[in-house]
Length: 181
Image (cartoon, rainbow, N blue to C red; front, side):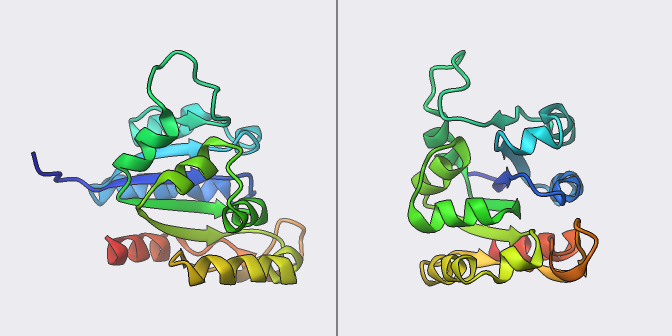
């Protein structure tokens, strides 16, 4: 049976820009995509998974590799296999570093590592963190391996300063998703 809908795994990490991920889910669904959200444990400190469940209409996958003991599926593998695209938005310096180094210590990093799907990363962090030589090296390493990036853009940061580090506009992210798929 041919697949008609494209499936997007939306990785959500602990950036204050997490509120924009809610709008992303809504917009992606409106475009006809199936959206499965994978939240890091830290992201759950900023917003409850039930919000993404209500917006996506799908179960939200959370935190660690072995957190969901009530299922028999190997979650990171099943998520990886059904992904047409993995979109990480917002993406912190932490998840970018993990992916660049091949660290698989949570459900999101394991899913990315296990997947053959294309990956689009939308960074959101403090300007100093974004411009840090290590972060820039990690981004360059991921780009050299075929990962795509969108943003960040300049604007008012959570710390109150203006600078580069704001999540790209949701419309631009959706436009990039459509281009990739």
